[in-house]
Amino acid sequence: MTVDQGKDMERYQGIVPLGENTLADAAHNYFLQSEQIPTRLRVAAGPMLMRGEKAPHWRAGAILIQHLPSEGGSSPIPEQQGDAPEGAEHEVVEDDNWVKARLLLDTVEDHELLDPNLTSEELLYRLYHEDGVTVYPAIPIARHCTCSHEAVEGMLKNFTPQERADMVKDGEIEVVCEFCSTAYTFKPEDFPQD
Image 1 (cartoon, rainbow, N blue to C red):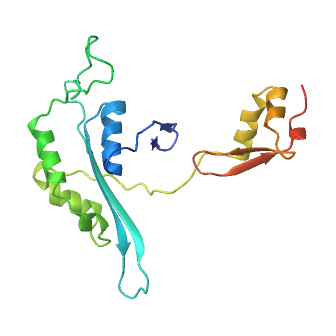
Image 2: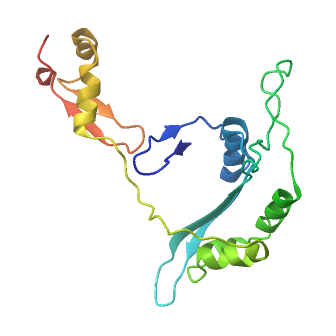
Image 3: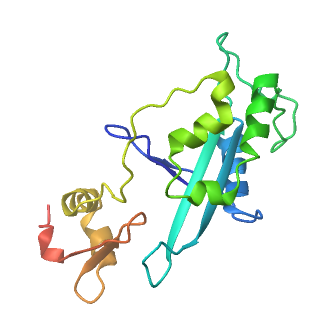
């Protein structure tokens, strides 16, 4: 799982087993074990046929809620005691507000997450209007990667000449970004011997 924290922040990756029933289950496990933040996620995807279109296109939607630490600063998941066995489940201390938020989220149906005419603000208001809803300006989502030819070249310069020589195949060094799958190729002569 890659978490992009936004502009001017480093993104980080965590390993998530995909042995769960759904992608949402894998995300729940990630947030519980890695972030130690009680989290609920609803995800839906499906083909949509809009009026006037001949072929359906895919649409996806998701909603996520998290139980944040209280004003007193205590986390909803207490630290594990030193004598707890490795990998033991963290006990989640649930307050009434978190239980209510979870139960309301569980009422969301797939068609609500996929409906192009239902805004996220409207969905949030439907669910949580009794508790007050604050909506912040939307941040457009775009698929992008921070890799570049220069960054990969700089990384390769950190290897010794012998290590770079061992990377050469068919007269080139090829590096493929694990995030966006962009392939960067370099010639051995791009790295003069020190």
